[in-house]
Length: 393
Image 1: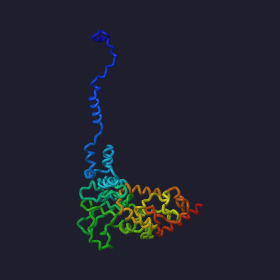
Image 2: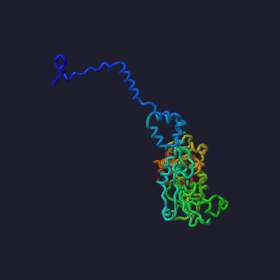
Image 3: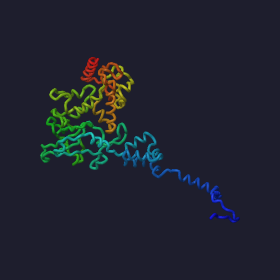
Image 4: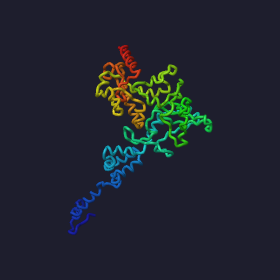
């Protein structure tokens, strides 16, 4: 039934109702404006806290790098509070907890030998953030500035595997140790100073222990490196400290303690030699002597890391300077190795005897420092490359 008004007229059901005068009043408009202001995001209590640098540093010390990134991406206000200045950001990155990603990389690359499972062996590979037995040193990575513990940084030799002696009560029975060279897959036996009768002056040093049963740390970059357990060629162990301090610009690991009975290089040093030899690149006089080397010839090598060698023009790199004196996380180490590999495998490098610029290569350069390598094998490399080039043409 259609409704009627008081004048008995038919009311149009489609007629729009007029807006109430109350809704258009100034007071109502003011209330709406206030409501819109209330909808605008305000600085939360967390943002106010994080804007105080000391409080921010305290919070960051309990976070991992991924946690800090996720927090910074939550809102623009939090991003501005956490990352106000580059210098402050670097300081904050150095306060983070180690993420343990270096341990994951080591576990992915290192392959334990069959002897690990056949004998009474234990492995100690644990990030400093997860190890509550004793304190592990942590520092910011030299490249990315993110906090990295000593177990997640790069080492030339990781001593991580322990095999108990047959009779622990017999002082003449020594435990066995093994580990890995950098991120190479094969397991190497590692001898402690007590294993070698040729160094009696070191007997007074504390004997190496199983890190899993004591507060002692693994003995990275120490002792004597033996040939890999998968190697069928016997060779004498090599002093790790002597290898680390060897001037690679004057002496190649290819000929270090060379003995015709064991091949070249020594089976014990083959993995380290592979790393050191990958930095060598044949170049011409112009590219090596140029004050601003062509970046396509010698890729963006971090010359600032060893400025003295770069300025002198002669390579004096050592494994210790390159990898141990710099506190480098394993992710950054992998990036650097990929950069070195890419620089050494450019298309022009396939033309033996030629520089990256196409000229005749007559010298050997170091991709670590851009200095010239003058060891006894450098001339052999140049002459060999030149001979190959003549034969090909």
